[in-house]
Image (tube, rainbow, N blue to C red; front, top):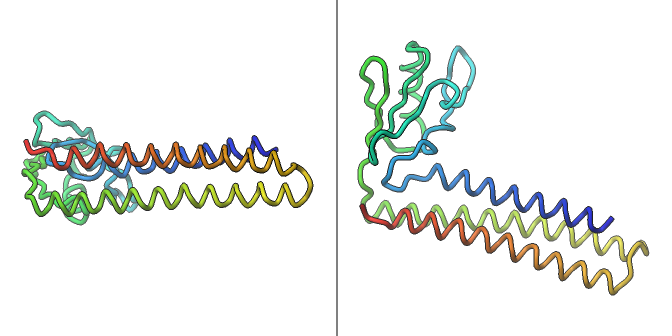
Length: 186
């Protein structure tokens, strides 16, 4: 029973790190990446649709993203969605494709992005700690109900802490990697 609870916590902590990695992929680094725009929601025939379901997105150069919609009538909606998004890029539409030039980041913008990375890292750590607290409560409840003994409770709490430390370390690794990408000039 307690093993199942711990495995479930491991899976939930893993999902928190996966979500963080997706969020980090959408943060601009001065280098073009499809992840910057893939999840932008475009109003397409009255329905909010992710951009990656409406167009092919490519990176032909280090500072350029090219978006080629499968339906040319979606060009205007794609342009409007990019302008409304938090990406901070201005689309250039030339009839069949949307081009996004990625300008180099200023030092001030780099610092702002690093702050954003740290804030997202802290949010992921809070989520992981919340999962730890929920599992710890379940372990204490199992002890109180007599399902496990005090030795097993202590052992499970230690294993839970090791699990938490491993996933918070993974959050740190993901965040430090993104921070290096942002601070890299080039």
